[in-house]
Length: 308
Image (cartoon, rainbow, N blue to C red):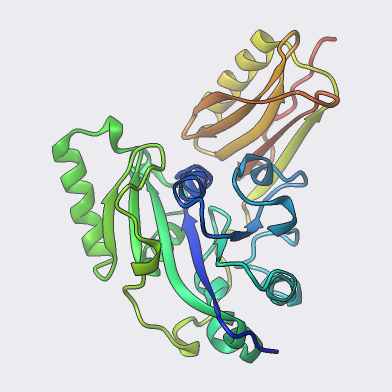
């Protein structure tokens, strides 16, 4: 199993809500000529992130369905990678977006340990996004640090709300946590100085990524789905209240929401007890809403009952 030119592969990591999907959309838009393929690893029964990515053909977007890949590196993962290279030999670059609570080391290891993958792919490096607003309040601190240590480039995202001194202090902390990585400040995932072809700062081999048991087995997901449009005011009141009272246990929420008497779907993104809605695509089919909550959800009342 061999192809003449190996496909560069870049890992996109970062804790829940750091802005990985937003950054990927920027990356695809600002690099229109290369042909990208994307491997998405999602939590939740309904794929949300695959609806949010713009710029990759649907046939070249692969979704892993067996949960967080750092916990369940399996035949599916390696088979998807081999299938992708065989079906799309003209792909110029592969992006792999991990879940927000994934240790990226086991995700990277197969590119050094599997002989077939070494024939097909060349590891290009890892980009870690950091939520500059919420870094001091991360509920899974150890995992966030592991994501940083593997990174070749750290993007301090959401820095538009920080003053110069705060940015300098956060950059200094990143330098101590990940001294080998380059650091760049970004807003809304826009990394203007990024050169994807000059990313790698670290040298690895098959022994660099020793697997270990995940420490986030208590992290759960819950998906709410609705087949009819929601009343905007009722849903937003419930969501704001729910995220506020459970902000220490709901790490992340995201979704696609349709409201009554509105022609567009809305993209929901929430982290740290806050959320935002962004107008999405025109509703062309039956208006369905899907919202995924991620966190330590056991015992939480996460049921919205719309009044039709």
